[in-house]
Length: 293
Image 1: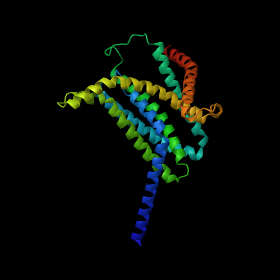
Image 2: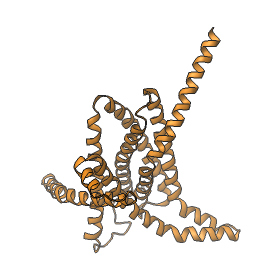
Image 3: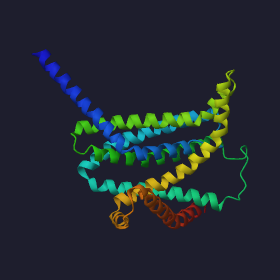
Image 4: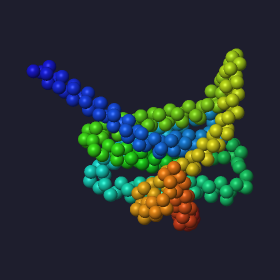
């Protein structure tokens, strides 16, 4: 009797795990678009001229830990909100989308309004530890918003499943995505070091690959910076298009082809970002002046 109960329990566990495996794959497929933006944004944010090669991986690890903490906060919160206050999820996503649009627009404004400002040499810049902290905080904030959207999208795909499957699937997805994204980000930021290491090998093939990596990486990192900024507008814009009824119905009325929907997301994100900058930046500057007095 005891063995029969044990086998029944094991069979139930196996069945639940099988459901979790299937539903995690379904949820992962639904979130793959945001995941690609997450990768581009984070690779862009944890790299830069002010970060030495020795500090790149520690920064990636620090952001990865922050990402895990984000998901520890977000998964229970999303589950609770989906049960007790589902209407709040859309508003939280809109706030997050607004932040991404604002940050993207602020980056563009800073780039073009201050492009003639001379750059400080490395020794005259802010201490490296402060620069690292700023990058880590910024990357974790952005990760929080992207993680929230990934979890909400995944939760929508898991809506018909039981609570245990939802919880386990979201946990598996959260851990898997964090390991994948930051593992790949760690690889990307170290590709130039890998190129230098291969250049020192005796093999001609290894040297050629090393030369190619060293040649392509500066261009690749610049392109990531551009892709990361575009991703902010695409993700932020898509949140407004999908979760704000007025914009959603307006875009629907334009009868835009599904293959070109990303253009609508980009335009909405860009417009939202500059509107928010026009409103918030003067308020922020006024607040800064009041604090200095």
